[in-house]
Length: 289
Image 1 (cartoon, rainbow, N blue to C red):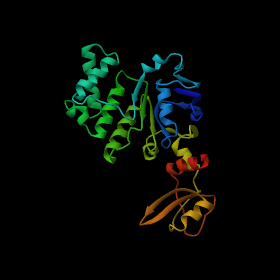
Image 2: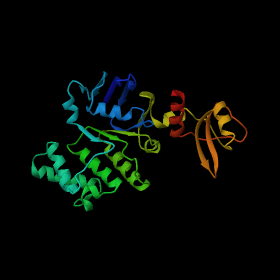
Image 3: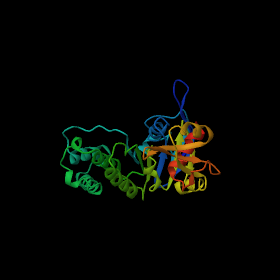
Image 4: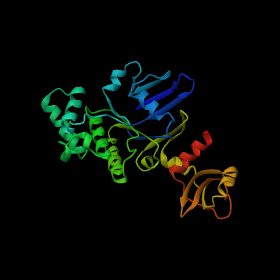
């Protein structure tokens, strides 16, 4: 279990990047949702001991991480938003190099671990290619391979599916889901679909604060009977936004189709629909604004 209590990180100008964040994150895939600038990356860097909070505590399986950061680093696999690679080094060579840095100094043990991870991430056929030549999805799968070195207890993936095409994204998320059966995996993202089906627990963060946390299905169920959808004209949209909590708007057939949060039918032409995690996400952000 990863336990965060009352974490605060304050910028020099007095703005809270993280504001009194408390979370319990068990083994499994945990989704951390929030828009860009919400404080997700700051929180991920703090958990990874790349920076210290101004106050608060972090415990991993009972160990005080802030007092003993090396204890966490020995059990951490970290996949940041962007990671550089040597332009001419193959995946096999680079992963072997990372394995040495992770403490796998015995050649036979290291070779076995590296080859197993390249198989697990479906990169075996491309193992002799330079990582710099990989597609975005292949590079992210290589990132997970290096994060899995040393049998980590905690894996942090910060916006790992940004820029991936749908097939690569699904392939990558399926890999994360399999990995999370035995370890804690934190998936930090602003893409709601990445969390809906795969994460057993999640939290929505906005303006540095936790707005809601729990099981995605439970959060969705709380909105049942209160989400209404209708097609409107461009001229109607501003007036409806003044009168109601408009959660989302997208063009369908050239006209705005909007979701409204309301206890009763907002206007004629709106029908009740089943809520989704996107509705939960936007409602929390609207209420926090």
